[in-house]
Length: 63
Image (tube, rainbow, N blue to C red):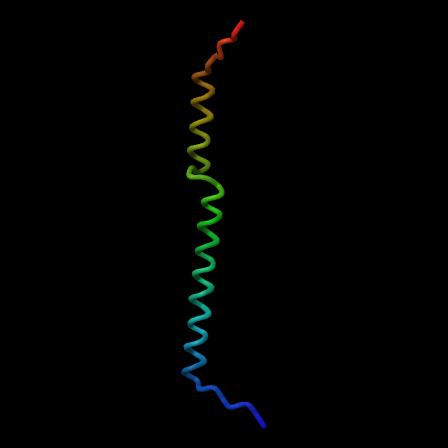
């Protein structure tokens, strides 16, 4: 016996579902990467390092 043929509209619907799932997975992965990298971006990191160079601080030494 052969397999029954799947209707064209059903194949389209299933393909759409797979595409949406793939998009959601990509967005989830992107958010995970952004969360792992931290809240700041490279520009804010550069500003922080520039400020640290301009305003050095000293640590008091306990005797």
